[in-house]
Structure formats: C-alpha cells, structure tokens
Image (cartoon, rainbow, N blue to C red):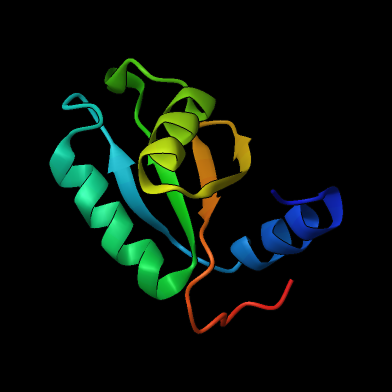
Length: 94
C-alpha cells in the first residue's frame, strides 16, 4: 500500500511518460490485461487512457486492472490513470 508521499513521487515521475494503452469499446479483456501485465513488469510505472466509448470511468478501469494484475492505482485524473507495480529489481525508488 502506497502512502501519500509515495503517490506524489510516482505522480511526478509519471508526468514524463507517455500513455501506453487505451481502453476503448472492447473494454478490459484478457488480451489487454496480459499486455498491461507484461508492460508493467518491465516499466513498473505506466499511464493508461480510457476512451469515451469504453463505458468505463478512469477510476473504474484503474481499479479493475490493478486488481487483476496486483498493482497499485497511483492516480486517476480525467480520462487517464497511472498504475504502479514494483519489479523484483526495484528500479524506481520511492
């Protein structure tokens, strides 16, 4: 569980990264979950976006994906959200 200082640090680090995945009309399927899981295992911190036609809000999508891949929701702002999952090598120091 992240505390507020850790979340703030991760949010500031996420400002410099691009949005990697978009959740569209297909919603959150197994293929998306697998791709996000593989990506977060390497990068630790990823940014995703929810499109208007998805039927999800950013926080709903963030919580569902985080639960399925055992990650932490750092923030959900507008249509974007940030997920964090520490890797075994622990690249990001928070």
